[in-house]
Length: 357
Ligand code: ADP
Ligand code: MN
Ligand code: MN
Ligand code: MN
Image 1 (cartoon, helix red, strand yellow):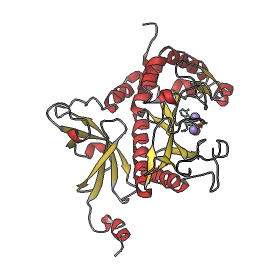
Image 2 (image 1 turned 135 degrees about the vertical axis):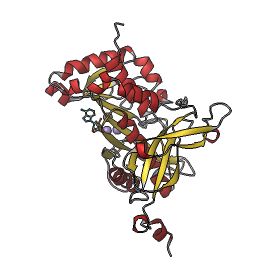
Image 3 (image 1 turned 60 degrees about the vertical axis):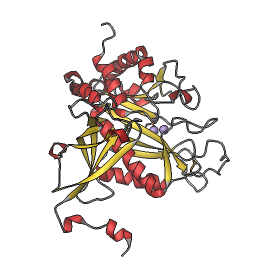
Image 4 (image 1 turned 120 degrees about the vertical axis):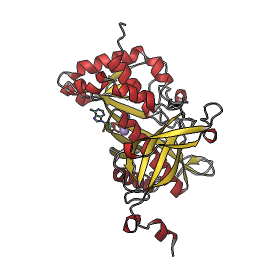
């Protein structure tokens, strides 16, 4: 019997039991961990799921002497790997006493997104996740000659052909797997640096933007694992004349989407400008290597915005200006940013914060 036959066994022909893969974020803030458990039957709401635990001392998250960390199920997706009624479960982490552990960024974000003022504004997020595929044993981008360089940037962005696009099967497998899972993935494209790609999640409302992006990252880790390719979220994987990797965050509120919303957008951008330093500090590790003012980025120390300007910190689309309503794009977040942190901070600054107070 081939291994594939066993992997493809359809459990629901034989039992009502399902497998739930519990997923959480480890101590580095970028390591995605998961383990599976059997449940008696299909589940449609995370509230029906049992809490679980893990050994925090093995993930760099043990708070004090007691190494037990408790997982709270928060969001459910269909499992594209096991299929059937099996599920992926996005969780966050708590002490046995019920306090979010320090690396739990979801809990404070959920607080922001449950504030009545924020709820009323129905914040939408569109996250453009850029990432780089690396040859596993040499840590060098996929398609690049080992120890050498491909031709200069130009032909690779949205490129096609064996000497321009490297890793498309991974990208397409991930795209379909995300749609299957129930993630609002809105598209994919090859990036400017060869071996670098992007997928977009959104528009997603509030905290679900973070849950969906983390689940999409998890699925990508699993698919690159199958392909024996290394996944990198480093904001500047290759020094020199090569574009870095970001996670542009497109954002709108209800009042920005309604007639006259451009005025609301401009006010929000003014607030972002006033808190530029705080936002940059929360927008990803190593972002200073990427935000140089070159390669379609703005300098990390200076806030700027403009219509259709890809060299600005914040870009407003031509269409938003013309229709006098719409959304804007925060181009500062790095590819390794935490969407819970970034999305909730943008909502807090633009909706909850009053600079006069
Ligand atoms: P870019 O032109 O910068 O490459 P993309 O097309 O890659 O932009 O991504 C734009 C993202 O913004 C998409 O995920 C899209 O769903 C999202 N988006 C569209 N409209 C809105 C909106 N009103 N508010 C927030 N996000 C939006
Ligand atoms: Mn894009
Ligand atoms: Mn891009
Ligand atoms: Mn963009």
